[in-house]
Image (cartoon, rainbow, N blue to C red; front, side):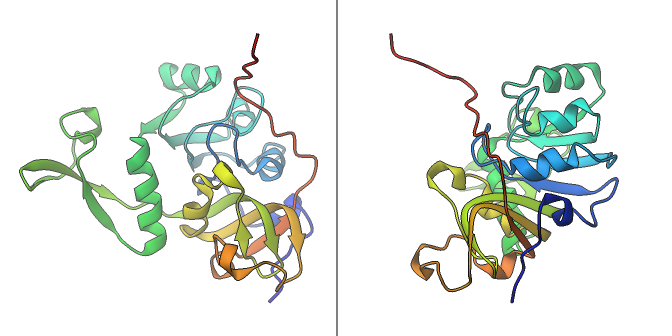
Length: 230
């Protein structure tokens, strides 16, 4: 089964206003740069975005934030994005901050078909307001619900035409679990090979979870904070 599309323009077909989308990456590591850039050129808006953070002011999801395409961010931190902070504090952007481990598990649960689970993180804080709680082994836990998305957009190091993916080192981050939690999953890869060329022992995401795949171009791979020795 060949799941390849020509480019990012073809990959985002079917995306509409008001959708919920997941974007892989941690900081600027492992983000689907081509898809984000292509979306920032469209008039698609009122989006709910589930992503660990929102890029930086002029790169990654920050591009979509600048164009006011995002209505709500579900993230674990504001990060290095001053515009994210500004929109959040001014009330222009709805923000749901989620403890990072809880965010990861809510995404993983969505892909695994688990509707909800209990977790101790956040109990007794603002995170727990309005949530059901229950005691387990003498410790209070919050009920957290799984995340699902209309589209999950991920970035992989290598992929094949059947949609099998391999992520490189820490660029795996949220990508692997998000690939399983989208109704439609789009993968952009640095290297696209024919089906059968990838060693099955090293595949992180089986192609059954991926509906569209293409080889990205012109990756910048920016570094958020460049630290040099004296």
